[in-house]
Each structure stands twice: as C-alpha cells, then as structure tokens.
Image (cartoon, rainbow, N blue to C red; front, side):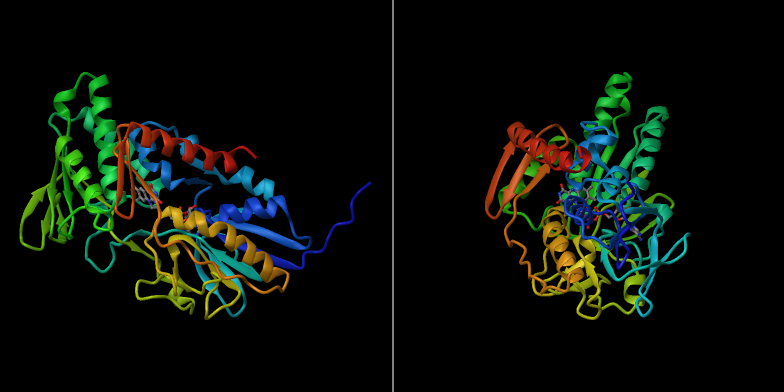
Length: 385
Ligand SMILES: Cc1cc2nc3c(=O)[nH]c(=O)nc-3n(C[C@H](O)[C@H](O)[C@H](O)COP(=O)(O)OP(=O)(O)OC[C@H]3O[C@@H](n4cnc5c(N)ncnc54)[C@H](O)[C@@H]3O)c2cc1C
C-alpha cells in the first residue's frame, strides 16, 4: 500500500558540502523531521577531506579514500543534490541564486562553502600562480605538473607562497611524491628545487617553538629553501618578486596564503567581517539574518574567533545540525563554544607526522599512523553508510 505523502512544510537548504554540512546530512538521515525537505547545493560532488589532502598529494591515499561522495550521503539523508555553485542570496525572498540552475527557495539556510587563498587585493593574476583551493582545480593542475616534470629537460623550480600548516604540508607532500615518481622513472636528476616564501619571521607562526624548529629542520633536510620575513609583491612571467626587491624565477608557484571569502555574501546584505566572512553568533546563525546559519572556514564566530582549520568545521557539524533542527521545530537554539587549544596533526609527506598542541610536540612514524587511523575512521562515517 502506498504511504500517504507528507506535505513539504519547510525547506532546509545546505550550500556547500563542507565538513559541517556533511554532519547535518548524516544526522538528518538518521533522524529526519517529517515535512522538512533537504537540498544540498554544492560545487563539487566529491568533497575533499582536509586531513587527508596532503596524504592524497603524497600518494598515500587514492581519490576515493580522500574524498566524500556526496551522492550516497544525500540519498541516505533523503536530500536533493544540486550540482552547482551559489553565486548570491536574495535574502528578502529567501532564495539562493545559482550559477546555472534556477534559484533555490529556502526557509532555513546553512552555508559551509570553505575559503580560498587570498589573491584579490594583492594584484596577482590567477593564471600566474596555482591556488591550492578549490582543491578540485588544484588536483588537475597537479596531474599536469607531474607530466610536465617527467618530460622536462631540466629540473623544475617550484615555489610555495604561505608557510602555515597548509603551505608546509603541501610542499613536503609534493617533494615526497615527485621524488618517488622520478625515482621510478629513473629520472632522479630531474628532482625539482623547492622554495618556500612567507611574510612572518618563522614558518608555522601559530605553532610552538619545538614544532617550528622540527619543521624547519625537515624542510632543510629535504632541500627546501626558506625565504622568511617578506611579502610577495608580484608575480609576472614566471618571476616572483618580494617586497624587498628580491626576484626568484620559478616554473610553478603554489599559493597557500590567508583565506578569503567570496564577495556575494556581503553583497547579499549579510553581516560579514572585514575579510568578508559571515559573522555568526554562538548558535552559528547570522545576527543580521536569523534564518541563515554558517559554519567552517566561511563563518566568523563573533565571540570565539579561531583559525581557519578543518578541525573547527568538523567540530561545528553536530551543534549546527542540532540548531538547524531546533530552528525548524521552533525550539530555543543552544550556544556552542569551540575549544581554545586543539591538537594539530601535521604530516611531513613521508608517512611521518607531528602532533602539536599548546607547548607540546611529538613527531615520527607512530604519529602518522595514529593520524591515519583517526582520518580513516572519520571517512568511514560518511563513505560507509
Ligand atoms: C593543503 C592544505 C592542507 C590542509 N590540511 C589541514 C589539516 O590537516 N587539518 C585541518 O584541520 N585543516 C587543514 N587545512 C585547512 C582545511 O582545508 C580547511 O580549513 C577546511 O577544508 C574548511 O572546511 P569547510 O568545511 O569550511 O570547507 P571545505 O572543506 O572547503 O568545503 C567546502 C565545500 O563547499 C563547496 N563550495 C564551495 N563554494 C561553493 C559555492 N559557491 N556554492 C556551492 N558549493 C560551494 C565545495 O565544493 C566544498 O564541497 C588544509 C588546507 C590546505 C590548503
């Protein structure tokens, strides 16, 4: 016998399949609210898991191991999956404007679209450098880079701009992967030069002294030249120029600097911070638009600012899901205070990693194995439904 269909009373629209919205999908799949229709609008159907990205580039994980397939997750949640990018919000009429498809109406909106390295405002054209995000673009560029290096008649010169955890990890992952690749092809004489540029006096400026010194040693041992204390001012015709006038010719320049937000969020009238990130209360909704929630890199929690890191996006997933449910059921929202001290597991590309927390630093193969276990367990939650 056919079940009587339940009328759609409310539309919950998730924009971006980031680390927080996937938790919303999972929780609503396990405990749906009758009459609430879920829709995920996302630029990428395979969303990369940040913790496994460097391991994916280094060649320790294949694509499926390091990405969450949002198709099965949406089916599990009973959600519609729209493969497109949001480019605006009509907050008055409660509609998300999409790049290609018709606008998507919402009663409640949850934005979790991540961030990209800052390139606007500093006068560096996108085609001169390779932004590490969006990762899907970076992955295809990485495949091309490997082929170019294998076919080259001299060693490449690769530069990374930005020496936070992302910049350091990606440089070491690439160095490791290329060394293996060239070794297997019997072309080790083509092993590239690596150059790391940053404006701070030291790498990994938000980590403790022992972590910084350990990574400095690893980078030097692996032949990476360090260029501290100067901003990159311009890149033109393959020449990178620092503020002090130093110029370095490079064949490939990876851009892994501070995160930036798209302009359309502020243009929609949302309350945003000076960098364009959506301001949110402790309950993860916008103070200017109570029907709009945000989490992960794109959110700026007004009372508890934290670095842009996947771990915070993951931690916000559960409270976000609970508060979306509370809002849909007209219940009181609950505040969430993110932890101040957190454990970072930063890999060195060679199946070793460093654990960093406060003044604490441990490194080696066992740290990588623990990180690998944690990351695989996280992925199983979303890929084995
Ligand atoms: C090389 C590198 C290594 C890193 N390593 C770590 C690490 O080990 N640990 C850690 O904690 N952090 C790490 N980070 C930081 C981490 O990647 C980010 O903090 C994290 O991915 C943010 O998660 P998110 O959920 O906010 O967004 P994301 O994971 O970026 O997800 C955003 C989602 O939104 C979608 N999307 C984007 N724009 C739109 C749009 N306009 N419309 C619709 N959909 C859209 C995307 O397709 C994607 O599915 C690393 C970053 C880099 C660059």
